[in-house]
Length: 242
Ligand code: NAP
Image (cartoon, rainbow, N blue to C red; front, side, top):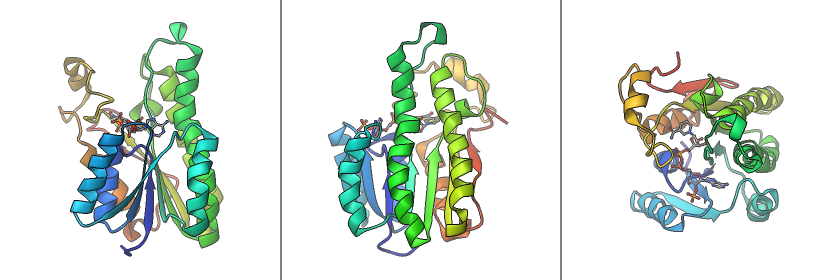
């Protein structure tokens, strides 16, 4: 991979995003590392990347806030265009629909769908001018199949799958490739409180996945070897949804 190329990874202070940032840095990308609030976790990822010989710029902003996103990204995009965008920032607010608050619905839509829109519309405009780009949206098994207690999260991730396919159709002629990676249960802060005795029987491989098992696929999709792949959804779920 060419040195000097930029990869913008949202939600990369920890978990899957941090693993993606580390791996893309090892692939030779300069990382624009977005996160929302955990400065010390982001500093740790920053130091790991620099210690391993890579380079990184920390970009704290809330992807759900269109104005904040534009205020940070627009000045940078005046100067440089990322070759890669990974839309990974997100969280769940689980609960049954009958009791779900408006804020639990809106916040989940805001971070996954709003975040995708706020970041991608700015970046893809630049990629189209450069006639090159790789966009990977991190979705979820919950967006592919039904999951009780996750109506908001499933709707957001299924929406992001739809956005992936339509954007791929829209920008393919300009050599901008758009795919989705769909993790199952992965060991991060998001899943640490889930009861493993209920989860493990749902997974044919019998274990929870590691963030690096997701980032390896993302790295491939951002490599030159993946130049004929667009509009697809790739599951990394240990067989939890087949
Ligand atoms: P995580 O460990 O909780 O990390 C979430 C990351 O997103 C953090 O860096 C957090 O930043 C950032 N973030 C959250 N809201 C944000 C916002 N509004 N603006 C910018 N950054 C924001 O979660 P994860 O498990 O790695 O999940 C990463 C992605 O994978 C999510 O989209 C999630 O839905 C998806 N996913 C996860 C699993 C799983 O089993 N873990 C399965 C399927 C899909 P701060 O902490 O600094 O605020």
